[in-house]
Figure (tube, helix red, strand yellow):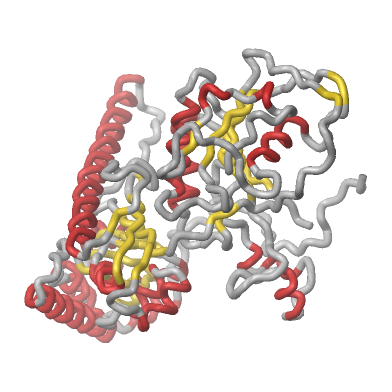
Length: 516
């Protein structure tokens, strides 16, 4: 065994030591100072952009009515650039903008219900006149007024969809995951702090007021979410699109956070371009990722050794294997399989069809073996197995998750089934991830669902990081590709293509992998 070390050969991207650096306060950015020193020009620039946006949006809405296209809800999508240190909650409070997405380097996507942008224009005019309370306008650098929304589209579309945007045909079929923001202009107030003079009664009153405000915010988000779910359904109906769910007509039960939801659509190119270009509350659009088993499986070798495992103790913990199924009759596993609760979650497949048919020897079967035996399988004797193994089949015989399955939803279904079962399972092995590396702008619906399940149900999900392939197409480069480009090990591990695979970026999962 190698001696203890700190992986000195791996260069860290960033190391820092010292007190935390917090946003807000301190000196202003140079651009903000320049805007304060040139109030009239900055005010004119923002007002002109606002007027152009308003006129373009009105023209677009009139054109939609003339062509009998589905109505767009109130709200105009706008891309802003602000001072990176600016408190974007002021956009909500001062200009009544709904925050759709906050991005790097001060870029913010908002939706404005007042398409005349009256509050914003008035504040810009007040800023020019040095009216008290209007100085925050100096921190708003730019309203992007391009009618084609090129910059906004580049920020919400995946790299591949953005590259295809100008060549999309009306009759082309797309399957996409669309993220919809639902926070409105309501926010949860900061939690109060107990002051030195607060007695128990006054502190309880403060807590009650805050708790009620939080509940009202959640209620408002729920109402907005319900409204926007129906808007998406109406859009889908108009374009004969299909909302892909595990159960037809099911409510949105997964990929849903308090202030957003993600929906998977099968839609033609015309409808796809329409909804992305015009629906104001979209923060991300991705194509479904190619989901697969990250580890290869070697062929089974040898004959049955002289070993007869004994079933775990009845009170032994259970581990659910969310994978390609399990060969439940395998002589090494059979005693530990909790067959009464085995379940297949694949559409069009019987719930009891839980066999692992992935060639050459299965994958979920091997995962179950690794859980029970670790690195070495005994050759003889009667070892008592330490865990009950539960079988959740979510991948088909080709190692794939059908596109009709929405990963957050099928994972929630599996966790609920086994966690609500007799053993109240709390440990789930999820050795499944996307083919490509995770994105860094937003938490994916899949990863967010893992976090949500861990929080709601106090369960542990063990998640694989994914592997770097030997070679692969751009942008999913493999080891050979990096070496050919002059990037040696371990330098290429800092490349985006070496990033952990979705959903391994989950914050609550125990993400397991290796550097080799």
